[in-house]
Image (cartoon, rainbow over all chains, first blue to last red; front, side, top):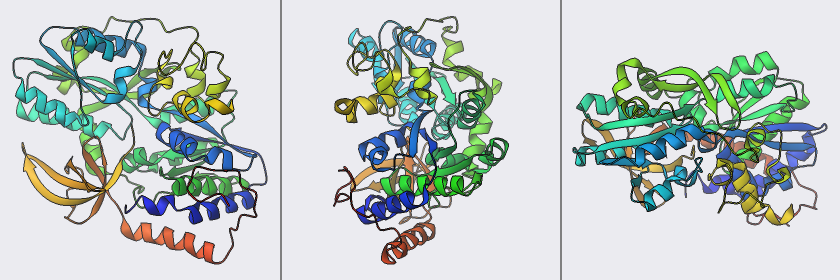
Amino acid sequence: MKFIDEYRDPARARALLGRIRQVARHDWTIMEICGGQTHSILRNGIDQLLPPNVRLVHGPGCPVCVTPLETIDRALCIAAMPETIFTSFGDMLRVPGSGKDLFMARSEGADVRIVFSPLEALQIARDNPEKEVVFLAVGFETTAPANAMAVHQAAREGLGNFSELVSQVMVPPAMRAILSSPDNRVRGFLAAGHVCAVMGYEEYEPVAEEFGVPVVPTGFEPVDLLDGILKTVELLETGKSGVVNAYGRVVSREGNPQARKVMQEVFEVADRPWRGIGVIPQSGLVLREAYARFDAEKRFDVGHIAPQESPLCKSGEVLQGHLKPSDCPAFGRECTPQNPLGATMVSSEGACAAYFRYHRNSV
Amino acid sequence: MCLAIPGKLIEIREENGLKMGTVDINGALTKACLEYVPEIAVGQYTIVHAGFALKIIDEEEAAESLKLWDELIKNGAFDVDGELPPSQIGGLEK
């Protein structure tokens, strides 16, 4: 398959791995931001193939994982309302709220439907004018253009029965929070390739300069990841910071201007809580006043729901690269994919889920 | 969630006032909104995320990095000297 197979080629992977082994002379801790990359790294055994002095830690780039508990509980509350169709990406349905998850709500009779695109939710709203249709709009900058377009289009069509429960987060403020932490060990970043496809890498240049770290936009296939790691190690070994693009076929400096325009039209930046981490200033997106009528939180008056997290769950430390999932006392004991304490154990991009799936027997 | 899959655009049409298309992702035909890649033409490759084409894949850039890696393989510059642990990348282990 074009643009996949070339980047799974064993000879290229081997060559890049050999080069990393040649170049890496010191100890380096590198964070891959994106949970999709975490899964690709573990699935392909890249963490075990790297020389021991190049260590990968896993970042907070899993929108499912960092969606606050109160958002899940608000979703559950809305889904249980009569004459409501609640729509979501499939990933969110198993995420534990404080009492249950959306799958359980569905088994209790709520009309909860999985969609692959927010435009499908919009179609459900067109087809069911007598019902309220709500879409759980989670995501990083990669997903924000899609979620923004659904609202933009609903406004254009005058669809009165569509709204979004928005849980949008952004990467650069999270990177700053990690780098500013007193016990930070991260010396370089693999930036999330598809976030950069939308946003470009211009906004990482000041982060790289301010904190003196390399930031390398990287793709998701094994050869892409090894190339990103190599470029990061080369910069670290030569004492350089700055942004070097390892995903040129998809990422440009300016990103996608059309997508950014609609995002900015519909959303504005706001402070935001990240599940397990706490509030990160100016790290989220909320609907602008002009689109407030599409805000499910306001439409259904669920803003007051504010539950408590399980004290056993250490997902916040995992998401900041302070703790390996397998070092959490609850990992594989109180917390499993069947009975998760936190979202990192169930999301397809969660670091705990990746370790449970690929590393359970080696820890 | 940020996974975006590459595929080839095979058709462009309009739905509800939006520019839409069909993308062939390894034989599976997928609907995608093309509003964010207005200049795309049938036959070009794009990455699709949440039902949206997000970027036209830059084939020249892709060819350039492949060429670079393959030259380095040819020159033997990156030869791994043996003892790789077993890996799940097909054929990577000796």
